[in-house]
Length: 197
Image: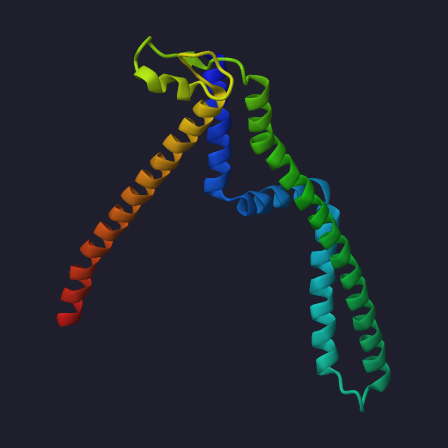
């Protein structure tokens, strides 16, 4: 029975990640990672951006003809700040790419890779047994590829769990869509009566 619930939990986790979206999870986890481990870099980037905006505003207010020395000094400061910001942005982009690669690999290992491993490891095990003669001659299909006759194999159980979760997802989406349409229909008469007066 533990295998039954473990496989269901694993398939549910995989489907949950698919429902939420791997890119959304990446954004959330990367934001948390950035704040926990690279807060100084992020703060430096933000401070440098605001400093550059201030310098650029002052540079625009300064006349290149009337106050050339001040304008040249500000221009060098802006150029230096832009170069430093580009270098910092490059470092952050490299960290982000590395983190994205590691995150996507971890997600694959803990979902798809783990499903393959569990399916291979328990390939000859029965998740549960069906009552004798319950499905007649079709009962052997549920034991494919290597589970004992009259049982449900890990692969078939994974497939069944995934199918049930997909149907559940579709039902929830349709219910939410119907509820949204009902709310819109209720709002339309109110808007129409307000326009007619």
